[in-house]
Amino acid sequence: MRRFFLYWLPPLVWMGVIFFLSTDMGSAAHTSMILEPLLHWLEPDISAAAIELAHYVVRKGAHLSEYAILAVLWWRVLMHVHAEGTVRPAWACALIALLIATMYAATDEYHQTFVASRGASVQDVMIDSCGALVGVVLVLLWRAWRIRLARRA
Image (cartoon, rainbow, N blue to C red; front, top):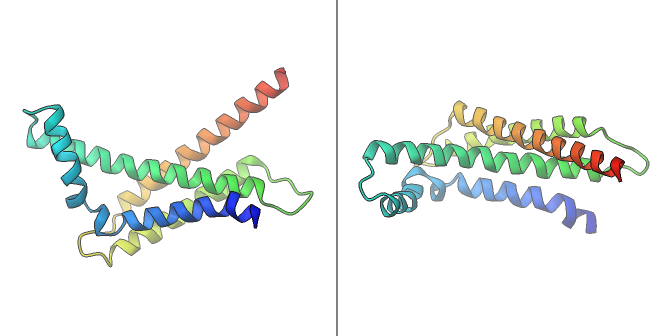
């Protein structure tokens, strides 16, 4: 049970967060209600085009970030939860985590076809996949750095 709470629960909860953000609550109409006033407060003379660009960058950045986190959480599961005595290479776990995150991105976009204020986008799946790739590359670099530090000590 401890393994479930330490390893499996975080990615499952994060997938739930992503699913929630794929509902109407995460639609452009809702996020603009937060972002637009903030941008006007920071820059009162901001143009409509600048607001639109900022909104696009923030929304796509959110896609990238949420899937980077998801891939790292799955990598963590795959690295730590395995049969006694077996060792999985970090790169193999990273590849599997990337595949899980990409498959979830595709199913998440499909889910959005059922939400009136949302729509499916192949571009978003690609951005999500790139985010997952960034996540696993960063975690592999972090791991290599930690191993290098341990060898020096």
